[in-house]
Length: 304
Length: 147
Image (cartoon, rainbow over all chains, first blue to last red; front, top):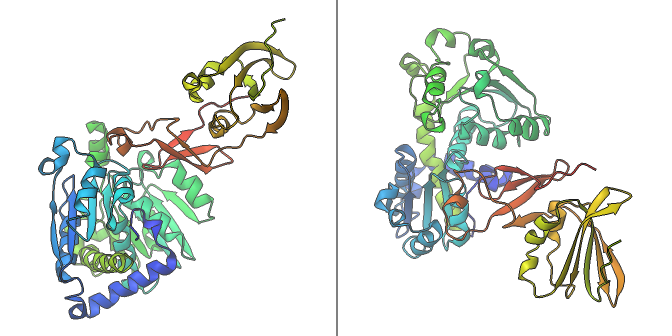
């Protein structure tokens, strides 16, 4: 039995298979409409989430399976003080596969160590969010037909943004990847990403403050939100939140075939007028999130 | 000169940084062993100026010495059998340490999950960096000794 706790749990070959399966699901959804008949997905969400939970539920329903679960810690036995280990042991006897989101870092790993069913990490605090990374990879792979040989601009909160860290980890496994890290001084990538991940693996990267300086070279622009919940200090948040706003005017500097990705939700870092630009693929990205979760559920159930 | 008799079977932990012996006594959980333990503090040392020494009279499989490698791999471990030193054990950084240090990240699952072991994994041997198994928070080695 396998779980998905970190984006690096799958080898490049396994990931390749998964992305191909997701592409096939996109092209031939009817072939998969009954692939999970009679099977149940438990969505154990200890903290609020709209798109991730609904994306998992849509994925299982598209496969013909059923869903059960809870959407906040208040409506689960956690409110009575039950441990994650005990909860997953019980849920293992109710469902065939489980997606868990928890505010504490490492919660999904604890769950997987006690689980009788495959566990998918649907976000553990500021730590990992592997299905978002799979979504990002599928979006790039589907729309660019490759995952290597490109320049990727990561913009916004690169310090606390877990999606950015996971994406960097995942992409350095492909050849010809170059990063442009665009952020204010205070929200730069943590040292361990710069030293232990990028420099150690000889990955070319530059760090810039101005989005305009980076745009002409990029094949992918990955925008992120400055997340209020990751700040301890309201003042710092207010000062940082409007640092980068992508407008139609700035977009004139970019390549014709550059893709704009965003893990969503967006606050105001991408102007609404950009939504109609063919390069804006963040809503398509959300759709790819369902396909990749369908592929993931099928793959983990196959490996049981 | 203070004389402490030799041991028949057990360990002599030599070249402990002066002042660290009580901490090591606790880390090795020696208080739980029903055996003779001698702690020598501030002994003269040509190499270190002064040092601590711990002598433990116990069966030689009674101690988990992995943790010593984590605390200070420069400690000399002499294994004694039949009143003679039979082996000088070389200490290495252990690949993982369990329940020795506590994760300081308040967002880590270890801060709330009942009876969950505190596990740290060696991720960079050169820089002696350990990371929490669950949240990957970095923790430097327990003691950084300059010799």
